[in-house]
View 1 (cartoon, helix red, strand yellow):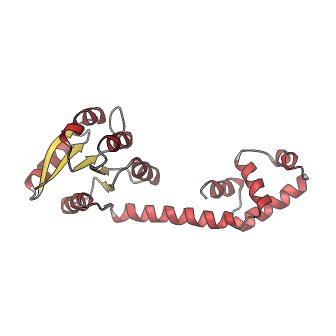
View 2 (cartoon, helix red, strand yellow):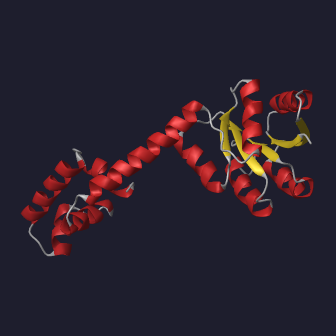
View 3 (tube, rainbow, N blue to C red):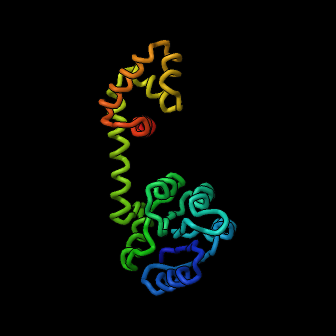
Length: 208
């Protein structure tokens, strides 16, 4: 049985190209295509394709929200993002919404067909560049967790108040310590986290 694929893509030209590529390739069949998320959500529950290729930047509802709603209706359908966006925020938003893979539109045809086969088998295909971004993000998150764990309980309290936007004097009043003591804690926090500014310290604290 060929892998049944639906396409959600607002570019008529790209949608047509993808459809022709799929229908000409052995083992694939394009069963439907949509220019927007709303039409896709209305139709896909009846078609039940094996794989959905999903763009992010769609008119009306975006592709990430479409994935979130679609996975609630068709949890067994594999959704692979096919987009121009390669920033970390879009990648993680899509994966958190339930996307099973993330490929870029500039991907070569052979590699794209292999990715569709992989996601159909239960894998999570990503371009090497995207996979590296995912790994780097996890590494940064792990490093932030380790560094904040080195802080004392009082230092963590100070940093927590910093992250809430409190000024040094307000932190001193809140913790009932002197202004100078707050300065000392801040200096130690900067040293342990290996940062030089309040913004960097708070960013590490929030990523933990």
